[in-house]
Amino acid sequence: MFLVRSHNTPSPSLSPEGRGEQITPSPNLSPKGRGEQVAPSPNLWKPTATIETLRQRADLLDRIRTFFNKRRVLEVETPLLSQHTVTDRYIDSFSVENYYLQTSPEYAMKRLLAANSGPIFQITKAFRKEECGRQHNPEFTLLEWYRPGFTHHDLMDEMDQLLGLLLNAQKAQRSTYAELFEKYCGIDPLTHDNTTELQLLFSEKIEPNLKGVNFVYDYPAKQAALSKINKTNPLVAERFEVYIDGIEIANGFHELTDAEEQQQRFKADQTYRNENNKLIPEIDTRFINALEAGLPDCAGVALGIDRLMMYLTQKKAITEVIAFDWKQA
Image (tube, rainbow, N blue to C red; front, side):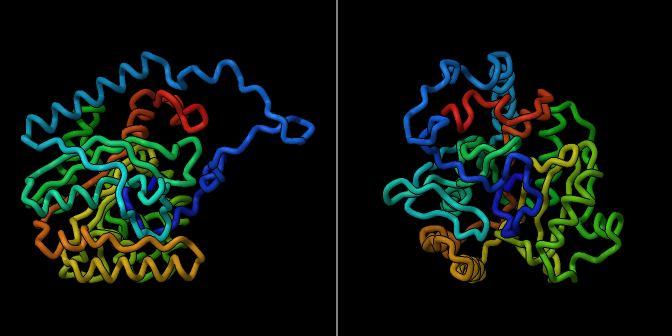
């Protein structure tokens, strides 16, 4: 499952290629194992996607920009390198000297929203360590956008319109997280304590049944990440995910605006990472200060362009829709 935005939940279903495989390049050894360098293949200069596929990709990006331009949503750019990164329990970042390659433009875009940018979108590269496989590349492309005044239901409506345009798709099926668990697993996930077990059940029992375009919304509060908790039902987080034929392509929130609550969630992440012997990033104080200054009530979503391209072109691997994959970069 692709962590398009932070889930604060582990992914139990590993791809055959190894979701968590070590991706740090190492010297090629000769068959004798003595450390001699083996000559690289003379064909590694070639792109992993065909030129025709890259033309289709360029057309897709153009149509996305046209969609938002017509709606007067401002295109923005934010830094790929930042002094801070996410504290998320299950996402690790690449570091470059005293900076981090960003796993998502989320924090920076919310700083723009707090500065009264109005609705904004961005198409950008993002980077996550130790994600490599048929549906994963450590460097990937995100479309992320934010709509002040929207709830997650409003944003699902707009996502439906965008996918209808890009994929010529029918309106998406919509189900709550609880409805799907009751239908396929016979349990109430909102009162279930084991988040990892829920994720495993979702992957094995529910995802295979999500044919076509599906929106899954109102997740358990324990999976809130950066989303609001429902005011009338504290067991529910106001977030949604988008699936196409059982593959996650997007993750959206009715965004948390409370700086104190966000700080507490970040501290809980740090505690988890400490207990599990993981690097503990410092909390991004600039982001917290932006929340304190006043993040407008809004909804935001991140969509994986590479996975969308896989569906659009019916390719089996992410390497087939990007110019050069991790191994040939």
